[in-house]
Length: 264
Ligand code: MG
Image 1 (cartoon, helix red, strand yellow):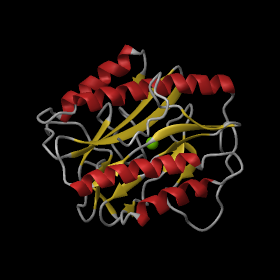
Image 2 (cartoon, rainbow, N blue to C red):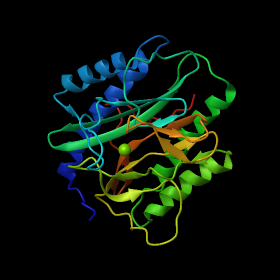
Image 3 (cartoon, rainbow, N blue to C red):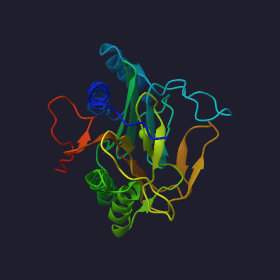
Image 4 (cartoon, protein in one colour):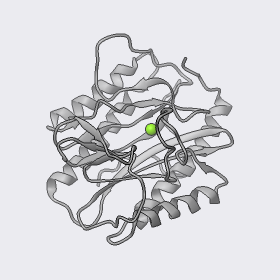
């Protein structure tokens, strides 16, 4: 069941989304060569708490068999796509690091992710980053009333595959609101069959996960970290987006940030 949000609820989600954006900003600012991912996790925790919010990821259980997620945020490096657990690993020159942040504030969730290169990386890595961000942008553009959820996936898939990159299929975007994960699922690719109509009041997390190689994935023994099966590098960008009468509204931007898609 898709839960539509009132304008008051959208404002609450915007407040939550702002905390997400500030946390990602703090993480990117501090992501330097030599810092441990556990230290970045602490920085995220301090930022989230400073707004009176809490992590929506810490202790999260995707299914009954899994242990709760042990980090405040997810930090995934290179071939790790998503759900990386912060720990002793230190960032190295040329790493592509992805931060995924989910928070809950006043009962509403926000969820966003951003990837960046630490230090210097080859041209191909930079291109992966640019194309993944562009795929998110193109997906968000499709989040308009009257279209279907699969139009978002089509835009993401076309952007990534026409650049020669792979689109992860085992993980998808999602509705979001009082719960971190709500209906509908928001795939980054087109599949056959029914796809829900997009309506004003819908709030969805659009999150392309793009690989430099093949799209197949594996889960590590830590029961969380998802990596590419062929060990190719991957990137991940995500925004929580509200569908309004005036088009898509990105909820996970900082207060005066207008777009968030500046590729320069
Ligand atoms: Mg998400």
